[in-house]
Each structure stands twice: as C-alpha cells, then as structure tokens.
Amino acid sequence: MAPICIKTVLISESVDPRCRAILEGNGIRVTEKQSMKKEELIAEIKDYDGLVVRSATKVTVDVINAADNLKIIGRAGTGVDNVDVDAATKKGVIVMNTPSGNTISAAELTCALLMSLSRNVPQATMSMKQGNWDRKKFMGAELYGKVLGIVGLGRIGKEVATRMQAFGMRTIGYDPITPPEVSASWGVEQMSLEQLWPQCDYITVHTPLMPSTVGLLNDETFAKCKKGVKVVNCARGGIIDEEALLRALESGQCGGAGLDVFIEEPPKNRSLVNHPNVISCPHLGASTKEAQARCGEDIALQIVDMVNGKNLVGAVNAQVLAGTFSQESQQLIRLGEAVGAVLHSCNASRKPFSHAHIITQGSGNSMKSCGGYFTSAVLVGLLNHEPGRSANLINVQSLAKESGIAVNQSHCASEEAGVCKVEVVADGRSYKASGSVQGGVPVLLELSGSVFRQPVSLTGNLLFLQASADPQLLPSVAGALASEGVQIESFSAPVDHTGDVWYCVGVSSLLQDLNVLKPLVKNVAQLSI
Ligand SMILES: NC(=O)C1=CN([C@@H]2O[C@H](COP(=O)(O)OP(=O)(O)OC[C@H]3O[C@@H](n4cnc5c(N)ncnc54)[C@H](O)[C@@H]3O)[C@@H](O)[C@H]2O)C=CC1
Ligand SMILES: O=C(O)C(=O)COP(=O)(O)O
Image (cartoon, rainbow, N blue to C red; front, side):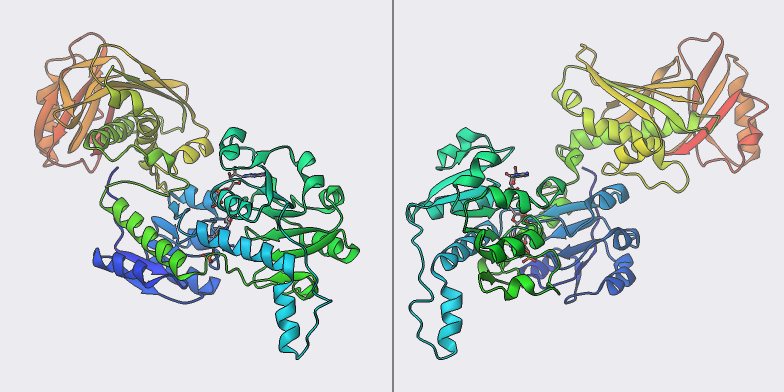
C-alpha cells in the first residue's frame, strides 16, 4: 500500500492516554479535546489527518465533508454506527475500529445485568439506602435451569453464553452468519427467532445496529415471548424498540429490563430509566480500565502500522487495501494508476468514460490476486486527472459507479509474465493500453494498437502523439518543442509503421500549450507521472 501520511490526529473524547503516547512516540502530533460539540468538530477537523473517537462523537456527513485532509477515522472501540461510514468511504477516508478490545468488558456487564435482574440487586440497594429492610419485595428467581436467548452470536454473544452456562443456564441463540455447528461448539443451540422467542426466560441482544436489527424486539415479538421475560440490551439503543419495551413492562409481558444503551444518549425521555423494573447504566459496557487500555493502545498501534505500511488491521471500509503492502503490489498499483492516467490523457473527446475493462494476465501469484486493487488503481488514474476529483483506492469504486462507468475485470492465466490490458470507452470510442512492471518500473507496452519497440517507462513528463507514420515526425516535433524551450529526453516509436500510430516522447517539461504540436499530429496528449 502506498504510505498514508498521518501527521496530526485529533482525539475528540476520553480515550486512554496510551493512545496519545503511542501516536506521539511515532512522530504524530496529537490534540486531545473532551466531548467536542458538532460545530466545534466541524470547525477544527479540517486541520487534521486523523480523528480518534469513541461512541459519543457523531462523525456525520457534514463533519466528514468539512475534513479536507482527513485520511482516517479511528474508533477506539467496536460499534461504528456513530460514524457515517458511507460518507467516509466516498471521501476516501478509512474507518478503523478495535473490535475485540472491549469484548470481555461488555460481556461481563451483560452478565452483571442478567444477575442483577434475577435478584433485584440495584432496587434492593436503593431501598436499603432509603433506610428500609424489605425482604419480601425483592424475592428473586434462580438463573439455574433457566433459558437464555442470545440474539447475535459474535464476539460478545459467545462470551456471554459461556459465562452464563456456568450458572446452569441453557443457552439458545440466533445469528444469520455464525454457523450453528460453531455456536454448538460453545454450547449454544441455534434456531429461528420464531422458535427462540417463546422458549426464553431471558433474552440478550448482541448485534450491530443496522436496518435489519432495528426493533428486533418489538410489540409483535414481545407478544411471542413468555410472559415476564427479562431482556438485556448492552449492544445498541433501538435493537429493542424502546416504546414497545415500555408497553411490555407496563403490561407485565416483560418482567424486567437491563439497559446499558439508548437510542438517544443520554436519554431525554426518562420513562424507561424510571420504570421500577428497569435497571440501567450510562453506556458503561466498555468502561473498564482494561478495555480502555486495550482499545486506546490498539487503535494507536493500528494507525502507526498503517502509516508505516506494515499492515492494515481493523479497517471496516477499505477491504481493497488488504494485500497492498508488499513492494510488488505497490509497483502494480503504480502501473495501474499510470495506465489509467495515460488513457485519460488520450481521451481527446474529454467526454466521460462509459466502460472500463481491465484484464490481468500471467501465472504469477501477484497478478492473479491483485485484481481488486489493480482495477481500483486503474480507475484512480482515469478519474484522478479530472478536475475536482480526489480519487483513491478506498473511494474510487463508488466514484466510478457515480460517474456511470461500467467496470469489468478478469484474469487470464497465460504464460506471458505479468501483463495488464486495459480498454476504456468514452463517447463510443475505445482506447486501449497494455503495460507491465519491468525492473520495478511501470512500463507501457502498447497504446491503442501501437506496440512500442521498447517498453515506455511510465515516469516523468510524457507526450503521446498520434500521427501517420513518417520519418520526418521526430525532427519536426523536436523543432516545435525546442521553440517552446522543451527538450526531448526519449522517443518511443511503434513496431508497425502503417496508418495512424502512437508515439511516446519523454520531455524535460510539459508544454504550456499543446497547440504548437497540433499541425504535426492528429492527436496529442501529455501528462506527468
Ligand atoms: N455497551 C457497550 O459499551 C458496548 C457495546 N458493543 C456493541 O455490542 C454489539 C456486538 O458487538 P460484537 O459482539 O463485538 O460484534 P460482532 O460483530 O462480533 O457480533 C455481532 C453478531 O451479530 C450478528 N448479527 C447481525 N445481524 C443479525 C441479526 N439480524 N440477528 C442476529 N444476529 C445478527 C452478526 O452475524 C455477528 O455475529 C455491537 O453493537 C457493539 O457496538 C460493543 C462493545 C461495548
Ligand atoms: O465499542 C462499542 O461499541 C461501545 O459501545 C463502547 O462505546 P464507548 O467506547 O464506551 O463509547
């Protein structure tokens, strides 16, 4: 992966000091603020390359669009629902989290809420503090032998299951991704939600917040549960519909709820918090010294590793960057971007591209496996040279889609060593190029039918001239360039000299005005790589 330069990071809320220390120890300037308001963040974010947040900072589209230099949003924790990941991706900003740093802490708080619900510990404590000694009011029920339904069997769901099994609970669950045989290996029998609801004495949710999980527990599903079912939400506010929960608590259909998270934090509407059968915390799942130390350290180390081009861990929107860290893949990225830039410059019509077909060839592993990022690199070359575009490997696929480019990619396992062929279409006209990496340098082998006698090194200032084959072309072009103070450094002619062909000329500097060459050629393009 080409190095991502992060010189300044803003930490916008309380993150373990290890985060700052590691970043600063690696030469990154850090500014720390507490509980930044949105307006403050919008005003300040433009100065920073990186932003580190927990759950309280809402990184909305307006924050992202105000961030001219931002390259990374680091979430010292798990949930990224407070970050507009789509907006970040479109802007080419990496979103990264530390998904396992707070798993144990969130699981332990879930277990604490389940236990507290079974024995009314918080309510009994409050009563004692008020001077009472009420042994009847707080009669509980054992967890032993009861059924716990776990919705979401990922990292936290699993840890909750194994801990509650130690209390003799039967654990059943549902997860659309975790295979039943995997959850069975840690004692959770999977079944459909329809089968799960009526069996549970307790239900705990551990899914991300997304359209398919909003209101998983609602009026309809509460009605399918055992009367008096107790529920815990230590995942995200809204997975249990708050209004439906209040109705179920009032009717007795729900016997109690343990809530760590709310749709609005802090919740302005206190009806749930104040309900006698609700116990609650102000989003404390990850608030332990250990979890914060891990998350603060993890996010800083992940950022530093990325900056140093070592590896990319925890990125939630930059899958294309995985596997781009070797020197070989960096050379292929440079080749893709250069070929894309050549084709962009040759598009005389300046009309938008409608198609891009990228073929990689060769039996080597790197060519076989580079398809995703190589295609993105070609698109970066094609799009980045358009005014107002700031394409990178993260956002380019969505920019290409937005621009209406139909992209195809394929690989052909030929014996030919690592070659790429790219064809693009603009205004119904096709432009083709093929290239490869030779001695670590990207080279152009062919341009729209003209196979160069020597591979053209895709570096420096290059002029591409389309003209009918003519031995007088070089001296005429040299003269025209000299009159503009530009010297020829290299000249590449095609093998075949019939009809209109492409030449490539390496020059000391780009021309101010391409018109000086127009009388000599049919088509002229220039670019600096
Ligand atoms: N209260 C707190 O302070 C904390 C809350 N969390 C939250 O806990 C939740 C779970 O975190 P992890 O276990 O680390 O995530 P995870 O990604 O390991 O597990 C989530 C699981 O939910 C499953 N899932 C997705 N859609 C589902 C659906 N419709 N029904 C059932 N399962 C579904 C996924 O397949 C996945 O296995 C997240 O929302 C996270 O933000 C995490 C840490 C601390
Ligand atoms: O990691 C998560 O998903 C959490 O909810 C923890 O949030 P926090 O870092 O405590 O604001």
